[in-house]
Length: 102
View 1: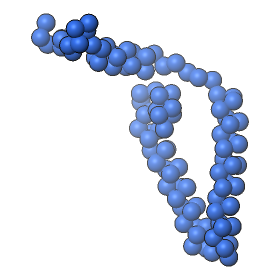
View 2: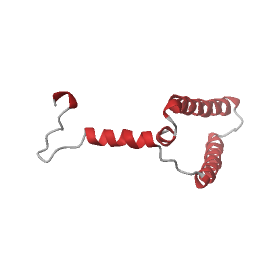
View 3: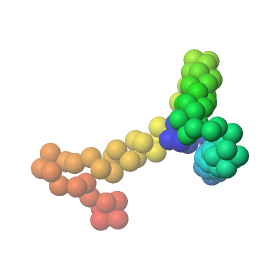
C-alpha cells in the first residue's frame, strides 16, 4: 500500500486506498466462498489450495515488478524534505523554532 500510495499523484491517493481495500475485500470473499462451498473434504487441502494461489499471485507480482519503472514524484520529494526538516534537531538537541515564532 505504501508503495502504491507513494507512486500515485496527489489527486489519486484516495483512489489507491480504495483499490487496496477492494483487493482485501475480494480476497476475503474468495476465502469465504471456498470455505463455505466445502470443495475440499479435508482442511489441509484447502490450506494447500490457498498456498498455491499465493504462489501464483507472487509469481505474477514478480513479473510485474520486473517490468515496473520507478517514478520519482517531485511532490513526494518535497513532502519528505519538509517532513525531514520539521523533525531535524539542532546541534544542542532542541527542536527547530517554528516559523510563527520568528
